Image: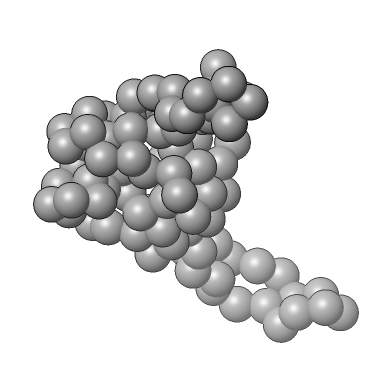
Length: 108
């Protein structure tokens, strides 16, 4: 199955305490169906000091379930679902992601 949300996509959070927040996808875990979005779902972790880093309270992003985010439509900036479409003919034929809301091609 092709990925509907990929690293580098601009997404909008649909559910949870960060509902309405926007950000860029930093990491995708397809096996667990989770994505990590920059600046969203921030958590604090207590970390012991090590030779590599100082200890203290570290703030970082936690993964969100993929069903709780939607891609930002390239045309109007609202959340949209993702579909697939083939463009081109013969050997140039390519499968691209398409915004369901506007029909705009997401992949460049």
